[in-house]
Length: 217
Picture 1 (cartoon, rainbow, N blue to C red):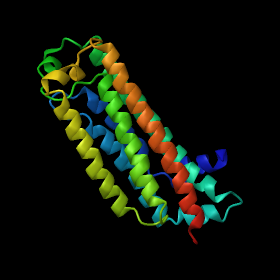
Picture 2 (cartoon, one colour; picture 1 turned 30 degrees about the vertical axis):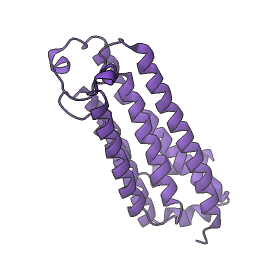
Picture 3 (cartoon, rainbow, N blue to C red; picture 1 turned 180 degrees about the horizontal axis):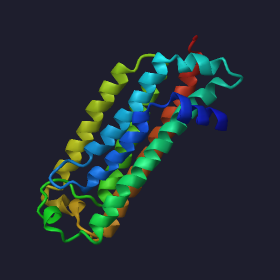
Picture 4 (tube, one colour; picture 1 turned 120 degrees about the vertical axis):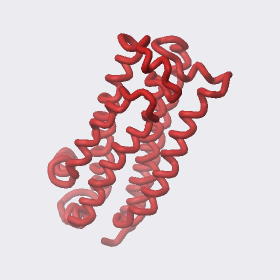
């Protein structure tokens, strides 16, 4: 399994999967829907699947002395590593905006989503949806990826829209808290996002392995 993961990271991955991790720094941008950065890192992983398909990586991998299920697990684990790196990168500006930059006028006067712990919860939800909708959808055929990616785009931007709208509702304004105010609420949203990511990924991977086992390559 470890060797398959190394193959994913060194041979099957598009460089864009690594480069687009830097979009986590979009959390520094005021006046911009910062959740869109989560879509860009998913776009980078999508490029790896496109590169992999054209290079017939799936066909090559199943010829190796490995279980078919491990082929699927390696793809998921590769994506989860990219997602973890993105989460760490985007958490850095969040922590800075919640501490030393919490009173900066550019952020205080920002009409869009604030970079706080709630934002990180929404990030995890979008990444979980990528694993569930796109990767799970890809392994229904191990070849077609346009439809699942378009479906993911729609879902991702719906979440972006919801994230930008919710805190404008008076009773939910605390979702856009600055610094560590309303910390219990912020942590609750992050916990919910983490749970959604874990459940969506686990369910998707289990189903993808079953689907892939049935495919005659």
